[in-house]
Image (cartoon, rainbow, N blue to C red; front, side):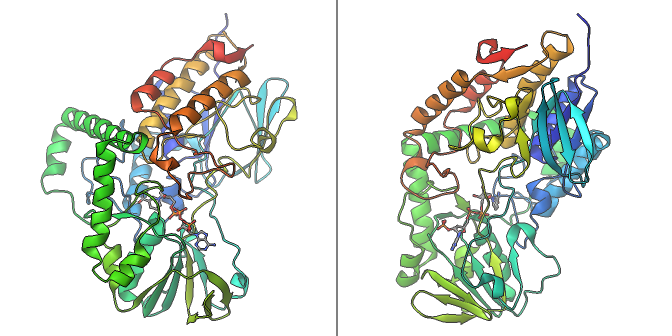
Length: 485
Ligand code: NAP
């Protein structure tokens, strides 16, 4: 059999794309190009730079297993520090030469000559044997349709497209939305605002953690001197963290009840005013939505210049916001912390697979992939952090690495001439999704709240299994689940 090097295109240079490029190169693949529409790497950490942005996962866990960083300044790193880390990793591992920035993919079409034809926004066409979509989950900002929003006289900014020139000090600010982002941005803007109105449609449980804590002195020096110990510690912490979170979210154990009790205590202890506390009290179980963590929000919302508004927004006027009870609050700046179209994945890119099937048609009933990575009708295409990825339970860096290693095994078969195309069967995908639906039953995400985890069809788009199951599933490809040619 003749050896031939697969031409690989990876879309996206965030956590998933960087991991995939690194893993494939490590496995000896040489024809790899990463297309990134942003002007720098980092994905969400490039696009998001709103005030107060921090990762709510401890920094010593929120990093690549193949590039642990000893010298994080904070125990929970700032968004800017994490973006810099991604840039440094790309430079240090020599991945920069594979990455083309400012290159947006608009179309990708499977050609019956058995390759992908990819078109960029600049009109350039590229051809690849394999297309890997590492396009992220929290990517396309969701802008709510609120009457009058377009006619507001002042600035309106979505947190994921923050304008660094925007002046907020001394202004009357309205923040809409209370996910992890809304809570962070309110905490950051409140101290210097003239006033801040936080519009909350559904209250959130907020776990207290000392988010602005610095990494303990001496830790960086010790970890830098002992890289093997650092890697082992990283693995242990990532393993322990995933295990705890999986246990707490997927099974109704005493550990889940303990974390829920902690969430309730955080509210009770930090908010003594009964009227305010009642407004902050969610009507669903803690952990049902993606858990919000903050060490400063309750302090910020208790401040004299802060107001928690739980009445529905009726309309935006040119100079403020009117709620359903008729109250009008004057506002200089509107901040939309309203989240993302979390189930778009690679869309709005126009993606067409075998026999011209579009991704919109393939996913008419919601996003669906086999083991997060393969889609029936789309040969030689894989997703990394695709549908059912474990946001909120298992490390996304670890998941990306396992998925990339899995994909590398298919590429190796192409390289040795064992196959030209690989496409997951519909039956295998249905079987996987049936197993997911059953496993989703006892999860906390299924206990009756409205969250971005839910697809339009009402399915929870998360990973309901544990880490060991993920490792076993992505260990080696099962040829019976695929059509090969
Ligand atoms: P989100 O969790 O989806 O929250 C969106 C918020 O906007 C919700 O409170 C929602 O209310 C509200 N909203 C949407 N449309 C509205 C409308 N028309 N009127 C009033 N309120 C409206 O989005 P996010 O806060 O950006 O967070 C998304 C995810 O990003 C997080 O869950 C997390 O995974 C990640 N994230 C992580 C960090 C970190 O520190 N690691 C930081 C930020 C974000 P309802 O709940 O009523 O729908």
